[in-house]
Image 1 (cartoon, rainbow, N blue to C red):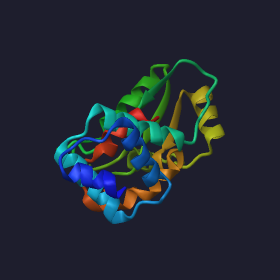
Image 2: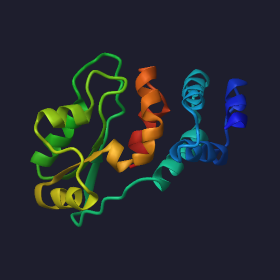
Image 3: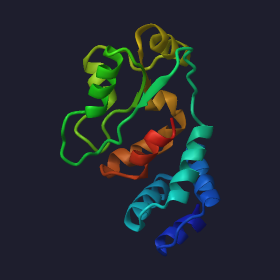
Length: 182
């Protein structure tokens, strides 16, 4: 982690393999809050590369809790959060409209970290149970055309980065990774 942070601090890019390794350290709880914060701010300042984002997404996918509905095809809907304008949660509205129109929808989301409201906040207000086991999410998609995959249950390894993201209160590479890692 120290080598990666030094690389980013120097304005240089990580390779795909280095990025994957760094995100694995984060996902496995081996990075400190200061290291995670430095990584996120450094990447935001430098700008993320395709290789960095790809490596991070690969590591996240290795730690995901899978959901396997039998209905096919399934539309994956996830927003990036942090629109900066504090508008309403459009991805959740789009997911519900698509499901109402007959599509099978897997909606991924979280509570607000850098926006006015996250998908979990909206769906909780609507009375949905947020933390279902994967089998019940799949059943919901199969039977009702809609299933919600709460980020902290679907990506439990993200718990190590969540407090830092919340405290930073700004967009980070995780806003882009959410849609790529499902």
